[in-house]
Length: 378
Ligand SMILES: CC(=O)N[C@H]1[C@@H](OP(=O)(O)OP(=O)(O)OC[C@H]2O[C@@H](n3ccc(=O)[nH]c3=O)[C@H](O)[C@@H]2O)O[C@H](CO)[C@@H](O)[C@@H]1O
Image 1: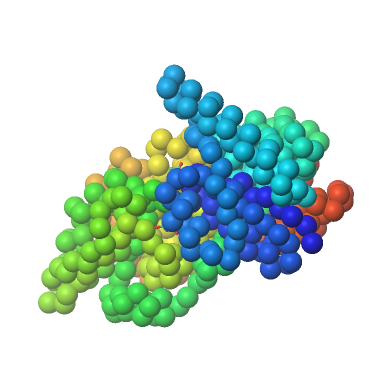
Image 2: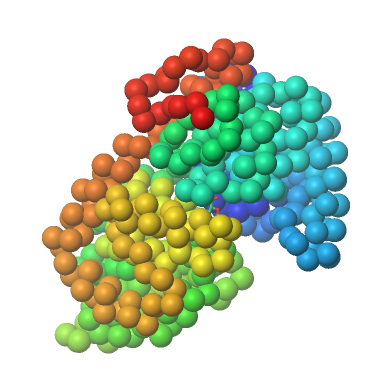
């Protein structure tokens, strides 16, 4: 049995794969502690997993204004001191960092104590923290086909994003029964990542009545602090009642995504992996201010692989007609679902778990633990 520290705080896109990894490691008899931030989203997601061990570490995101940078530097220093005490107390065999400067202190503390470090990058453009910390890492897990130039000697493995165990594909019929959604009407789900997306929420406000007229139900996850839970009813063209749901946070993402004919979503790596797992086509509206425009790169790859379409935030005005066309086009939706099944094959948590076990026991595998597309050294 080995002990792992998983630094995965700051956003759902880091915490969800961290939870998935912890679930897999604990199942194999290892000890895993998840290090998270003080943010509300971390508290909300982690409270669902009472069997996993979480610790909060001081941290702040990188900001370039003098005030934000001072806060960042202060919290990083506190986080580093806290992490050094944690590393001394928990004596991990390996530390895994899931990107973002929120998790940098733990990674640095581990390295200072001589603990092997592995990094996971979820996005198709590696973030600034990954680029910097990869200089002190022993392993880097990257999405298939993504490279990080200039890291000769660093062992890179290519693998999909770990997905939490609770995210499983259900039949649409079963998922809709669990949600209380009409099985005979179409359903579009709108997702804004772990924080919600104001422009998508506004699009739902402006479009819900028109979609309902066509018999299309909408379920919008608005984001914490962005509205209340409610259900509204609209008249459909054929006299039927069509409902529209809003909720700030969803605790059953696998059920909701499985129930959808189409999901309109930001292009965070976590949500994309869950759309693939549940075989739900996506209409992706990348967040235009994501670091290095990584959501655009994530979305473009998803579209190239045939999982759905990309729509720019500036083109939301035309989205209603596109959705109505798409949601009634069974041939197209089936085509997307076939592609999503193929895309799922790129995802394997086993690659990461076996590799981390090898790292913990001091073994450096000379070749992939399973056939390509897994590993390369760059
Ligand atoms: C704005 C921004 O920069 N977002 C980044 C953030 O994603 P961000 O956290 O915004 O979103 P992701 O889509 O990657 O992940 C969200 C996760 O939270 C879960 N969830 C979300 C809402 C909810 O109500 N309930 C719930 O359980 C989802 O199921 C998913 O597991 O980190 C990702 C991984 O580095 C990046 O790809 C994203 O670009």
